[in-house]
Image (cartoon, rainbow, N blue to C red; front, top):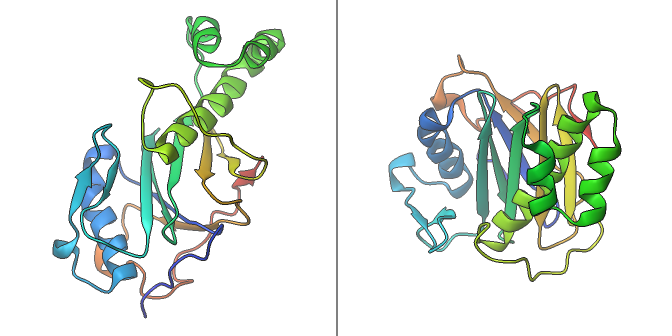
Length: 204
């Protein structure tokens, strides 16, 4: 059975136990199942800012992110979507990077936290920024021009991985799927509920 296309505001997020360089066959296999075609028929192109997208008209949109040995593939019912994940880790330049890329009050709020909480707070804000930029289709070379409303950005976490989804429509409850490294690609999407949800994933 083919997976149903996501409804507006209810994206499907696939957690894939694979590094960035390993994910292309998984991505092609998942997208092919939604579209009812062969993986070899999936053609990926990039816009002038480097955002990957389907090269042929299709009733869905996607975005990917990689960190900490995981890849997340977000699929929407056609509306632009952005996703970003980051493994939480402290680094010496954290405060300086926050002041360059975040609003002044956000950077100050991170700095005011106890040292042990700053890396996670930074990762949360960073992924929200990246998800917005990826949804808009451009990177850090351009200033944000979109006005984001409450509910268009959702943060989540899984252990030491923090992430965010951004959409042009208000987000409701995403559907989560997980693929283990040992799972054969031929089994992807056989049943809509055929992949177990991530039980310890938290929305924030």
